[in-house]
Image (tube, rainbow, N blue to C red):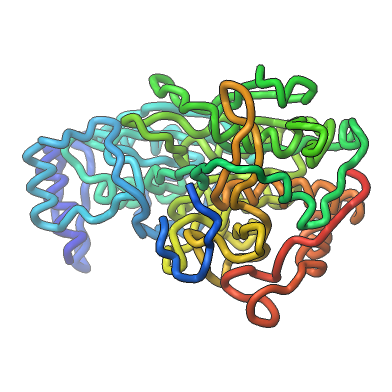
Length: 453
């Protein structure tokens, strides 16, 4: 009943005809029909910190239900007005309690032309559209009607265009902090020995979805890197610190004692994290196209050092990408009682938890049944944007270690992504409770690998 009241209020606000139909439903439509830093003491205390318009194609027939759980702080965007009295009125009636998405926007997969027109007719605006070459279909970012809550607008869009997949434009944060200290221990503790220079040069690319990277950094001077930005027009790049550190761990030369984990491997660096209100955030609207690009460039391992809420569009992109590539992501830094982090919590993704040099769990690490494997993520030495090196902390920095191991495991299994994943979990060093647990997953990564795929 509350949803019907929301829809009726929205119709009145937009000046759109609305009336009850047989069976107690509500019809809404246009007047004229149309078609369209950690300190290393990581114990267990966690104290730190309906459809009318046809279509088909990508996403057709997919479940339209959405998980609306909140993570992080609400970000304002599109045409949302913080001081809009209509928005305040809606909030006073129904609350405003989700803070994990861009207010004022929704995203759509495979929106047909007549569905697009239908949404425009009731007040939506198209902010951007992008074809998805490898994943198939297209991604559209829509501004919701002025004064309308994004969640209410999501329900309206789903009711008008059942053939497309809609969700909120969830935001995702990088999974790392930072601290100082010597940390040339990470590769050694998981058995990833140095490979000869260029050992991975003839293999398929490895991709990271992160901030931009500082391609001129000395650590990346000999690396084979291709970059692409998926930020929407008007969004500034975030500082390249995080992405540069992730890239340098995989293909960078930090020092004679810290060789790249995948020497010579072609690296695809997808910029999906940009600045929104001064904060570095990725969006579903930037992550999905980044996956598409990585797949179109034949990436066989894709690493996500980001965390956020579940999202239907992201879920479909992940599912399609996993048909050909190994996907690995940070388990998150929400603390032992934190919500599962996505994309890591999708079953197609290998979720990585961070441990310190004494193999204790990172105190801010998220735990849960979705955690699959653990790797060093506290005081891990990598590049610092602007030059030099620093030690980094967070589940973000455990991800590139596992990503490089997956690249080697694919070589051992003939490029089979399922077998490569099983090779790592089967050989993991059991830590914590016997068997798979919510802290370490199957255990600590324990894999050498002598070649790349």
